[in-house]
Image (cartoon, rainbow, N blue to C red):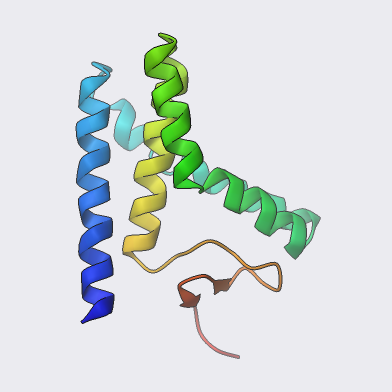
Length: 119
């Protein structure tokens, strides 16, 4: 029951991010084009699991994403607002599918539990 409730919450965040995007008046096709760009942060794992987790978690932090969005709107910096809403949407979508923030021990160890197959 709790897992379903959390997934519904993440779905709500995804829908909210679409609304925030709509407020920016940026062409609609940017949203799907940029939605998975935050996954480039996985390249941090090339430097090892600790650095990889730090880079991944910074790029997938929804609090920072909202800060970028708000600052972008307040300072009339549409690119910053766009980055914020894309990060927020992507991170919410990740969590909807069970991919959480990473622990330093391995990519598959997340705050939502382990992902992937157990060895």
